[in-house]
Image (tube, rainbow, N blue to C red; front, side):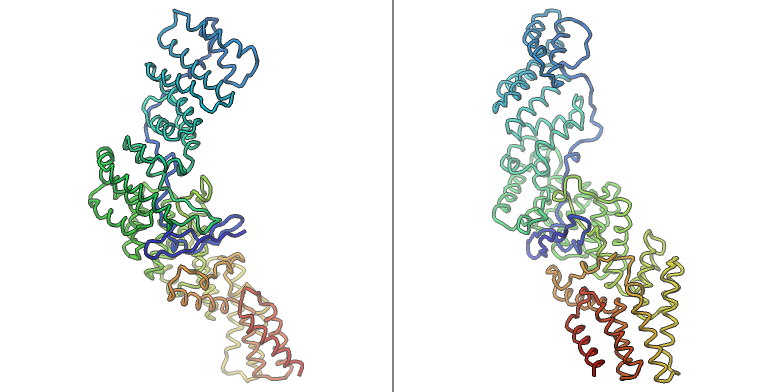
Length: 610
């Protein structure tokens, strides 16, 4: 199953959808760096907002202390634990009011224990209203808010804040709930685990906060932390692999939304500068500009960031800087920031991979084929060891590139010259995955009839099936190329050579190490609207030459046709015609040239009947 999204090339300030997506067993993404969507800012998943080294406590929640006593508080805890564990028995629920009253009347309780009683009461109220499918939960909210006004026990305050956030969430108040969860996530002394709060944040916001976050965006500008969180989440890249239109930012509604975000950033610049620095504010501005489809605007913001600013060292800034350069067609300027992302110890595996793939695009545009092979090969070898899987579904990925390996396949099999591949091997003789490059060079040499050189490479890399076959080809080709043979002997040698070719389809000129039978899905130059006319014409010609050069049956047919022309209706001539027809009929429809093939079949068949 294959899915093809929009393939819109950036021009002016366009943002298109991602090109191709793997939905099932394979993926035919190709040249994804030509899609503007690939260059959107990195997505920010919720764990990104959790600070390091936050000190947390782990005290029992209200009502959850194990207590073997028989005092009023112990009985209240026992009754509460029964309902909190899901026990709906009448005895447990019936005991609660009496137990609550007894605990409140107990004058021996400490201040901390009295707070515990009140928090248990608020939680019981919340559970009761939830069980009744109450739409308001007003009682629970009122009790929790009252508790927080008077509570002095840090662990209980922490728990109460999160229960209040849960009530806000149930009541549909995403903003109030989210602010509490976000504060609690990074609060020293919080009694809630990091994982619990992140799960709550995910329930509240999912991937990008949705329409409710956008509707209430201005309410997050009460603190710099809230504002930064809201802007980062609201500008998360998002695309739908099933739709060409939902991915575009080129519509009035989306432009209005991101114009509003930009206005809020400008209006509250002092708030963000005071706590996070002007440089971080600039990064948010760049992120918003790119999300709006305004790369020149992102470049203008980047120019205002001092060269010595720490933010320039981060993967986010360098990725956005490279993106803005690439989308404005300044490909050479995108190289250094992409290399900075690739080489940074602060970059995640996904960020390194996106930078490597972006560099493939830069070097393709600039004609640096050796470095293009280097990074395409790195992606190929690394993806085998560290597959970059989306954590929240394909639509929530930061970037998406050719996990299929089609870019590397076309590069080694067609787009790079033999001289380019040889230069790569001299410069990078020992990089991981280099055997695949050597194998591909041997295949390319066979297509040039340089069989002895190819056989030596195959032997050196222990390609033990191809090596003897190509040595046999070398001997047959040498015999068919001799100048001292008679015409009849030469025709016989050509026939023998062609016969061997026709008996070995996909074993001589086809690169089985690259394609696994999937090559036809990579030959898309004629339909790729992202290419310039010059690029398209060049690649179409290369793809056609590749199809001709790699197909043993076609090359056998061409050789056999020359035997037929030279020999006429001799026994060898007729035999060559019969084999040529077999070769033509064995060609797959992926080969193309259908009219030419059918015409040749008809002519040879008619010639034999005459």
